[in-house]
Image (cartoon, rainbow, N blue to C red; front, side):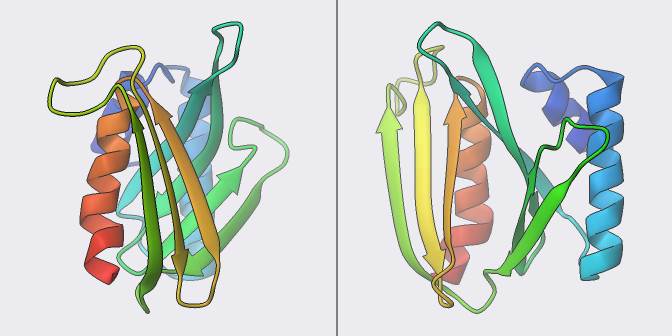
Length: 146
């Protein structure tokens, strides 16, 4: 796994070697099956009403595709799909809460919804420090395909 992926996982609190091993396995599996180099990753996260942080799907990003790996923290079952974004993104919506020019805080939230030309829809969520990563992905991979 790329060192930058490990640094990213650490930055959002996923420091367990088991989780990192799972992510590495999923990346290798997706690369082999889909014949695409994974150039970036993103882990969806949100907070429950009682304040617990929950990690959703692992998103696999290549120059032309976006993949979602559900249950990425499981060691026995993976559910991975891949959809093209290189053919164009037809819709993009961004929801920001306590995020902007003043920076980020523990209350910051970003939710992005978009669809590709084949009408596959995506929704990614981020909290706190992970908001910057999600916005970076939108700038680098989604907006260039609109």
